[in-house]
Amino acid sequence: MIPRIQKRGQRTLGLLYYLYGPGKYEEHTDPHLVGSWDDNAPDPGRRETATLKQLQQLLDQPLENIDASERPTKHVWHLSVRNAAEDRLLSDEEWGAIARRMVAVAGIDDPEQGEAGCRWAAVRHADDHIHIVATLVREDGYKPDLNNDASRVQAAARALEVELGLRRLNKGDGTAAQRPTSAERHKAERQGRDRTAREELRETVRRAIAGATSEAEFFDRLASAGLLIRKRVAPSGDLLGYKVALPDDRNAQDEPVFYPGARLAPDLSLPRVRERWAAGPLDPEPANAEPSTRPVASSPASARRQTASAAWQAVLIVESGDDRVVAAHIAAAGEVLDALAKTSAARTRSELREAAFMFERASRSHVRAERGRDRALRQAARELVHSGPALGRGEDGATTAMAIDMLFFLITAAAHWHARKNHAQQAAAAHQAAVHLRAAYEAAATQPLGALYQRGRHLARTVQQRQTALLREALPQLAEQILAEPGWYALAATLSDAEAAGHDPASLLAEAAGRRELTSADSVSDVLVWRLRRSADLPADTTDQVPAGRAEVTLTHRTKGSERGLSGAPRRKK
Image (tube, rainbow, N blue to C red; front, side, top):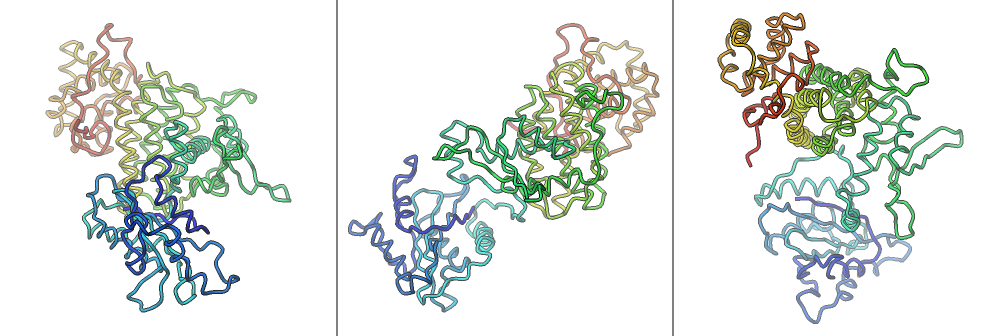
């Protein structure tokens, strides 16, 4: 149940015309009252002799009992209460009881207090929601106390969900980004946008921040993304804030609609953005780059390897670090997801974009981040941005799968941390992001793991026997499980590659297995493949070593049973 207090207004009749009218898209059906201050207000929807003007005059009558100078400029209080799509259909009587509960907790009208209340009416014009209209002057001429009315109606909604058996939403903590208004959603639908202008701007601004090292770079990225920018400058010349707009998002006067950074999300205000680089600069460019050249990573593949390593180290911090340091790493993980989505290939772009979009909510909490300790992740985000787009094949495509696999560990660890802190909305957002990461991983991993699978199947029998013996010696408790997995062939090929590169495969295997538990993963071999190839710096893509036509192998053998990593993540049932 979602209660939303709308902006206060000054025209009761105008609001009633909308509530009893057909709606902007003919979506209103059978408008009628389900409750009112005295349960006897005229209902223009069900009583032929009743008019909207009569209802408006009765609602506003308390205004006539006070001097005009004392009347509030905006006296119309408007609350909408909406159920989830999967909730059962409530009766008019139930909606009426909900309306009475809401006006009571908000301070509009509570008969149990024995004081005069405000006049109000609840209109239902759809199955799943009602609108409550109230006049902000009590019957005795005093004004109601509406301090914290929004938090009180939210608390009432949580209680009503339990009492009425409705979908239970997670309690917020005031750190969420402002949701798009109904007008913004309808405008996006008219313009054929998948997301509202507010949401598109929030995503674009977050991508511009990812790995940025200065205000100048941040604003250059915003301009390069095509946004219109307005800066708020003090008389001293100091920059105080900024606003952004989409060039084609305009109001009725054909003017761009600007949004301040703080209205996009709490952490996108200029002071909060500055915190990201205040603790110390990132490396602006590789050590061997010419001073005049644009900073770039050596390649998309190396940037993704760096991302995988940084994510893996961050997992250990999120699981056992200081809360403020953990909060910084979780926020920086959001930057990495934004950067990866921005530079991903077509096969993974959509799912990575959704993962970043979902994780945005998990990147903020009331635990204030201690910036500076998250430098490795932010540097990885910077390298991703400056390495340019990945092709989605070859080494950069395979290292994308490696990076996503490690990021899944990190995002899942963040979800668990939020859950321990009772950050319900953040934990849910992180889990949703993990679902999209899982889908992106499967799209990225099919080809490189398929190539390794085929190479492993075609190793000489003596080599396979040697790798089997090595596995049983290094991981005696897991060996038989791994040997029974189809992914064993990819692991055998990886062990062979490590040996050929001069590594001790037994030591690498023991180290990779010892750094994190593996018993919860159904496909332990797949987990170990990426750990070994990352730690031994082995090529992630081996397609050129596989006969043509044999590189693609289905991933249906992949795992079912864990949240410990994509290689051990549950697959959704179709």
